[in-house]
View 1: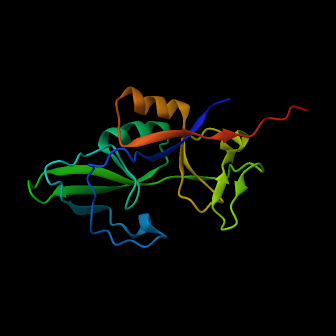
View 2: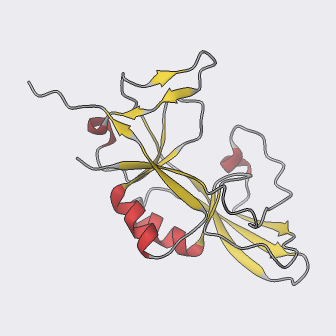
View 3: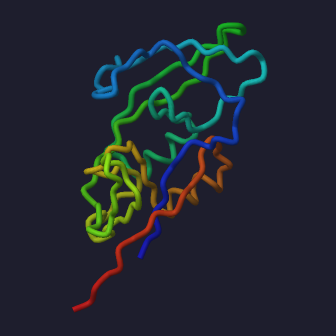
Length: 173
């Protein structure tokens, strides 16, 4: 049985670049993007270009895209150039449309407002996916397999933390 992890923003990294100017709505954000976007960032000289940017929408660096594309070739990509307003340096990031997988276990628990209290995945439904969103929840969680997570960590990618996700116990007949 393969382990899975939530890919979440690393809150410990306070000095990361913040792109501005997308002005996207909550829904259909990927569809609203043109094939190539240019966004301004103000680094104040101390901000870092990390590999995983969760906001204003999930974007990954070129290094992280290379690995992610190997694990899931069906992801759709749109290029986002981040331009430093002071130095005019450009860094290429990629917005992505991640496949949505119906993999919630019946053991998943929800709060009264519909948000996830306890996320449990049914690994039989995940099949061969290594990088995906979970269908049927309000949160925009992105889940990665242990294989993909190890590839990210071996290459020293940063800007994210990995939180292990519970899996439903298999019942043998």
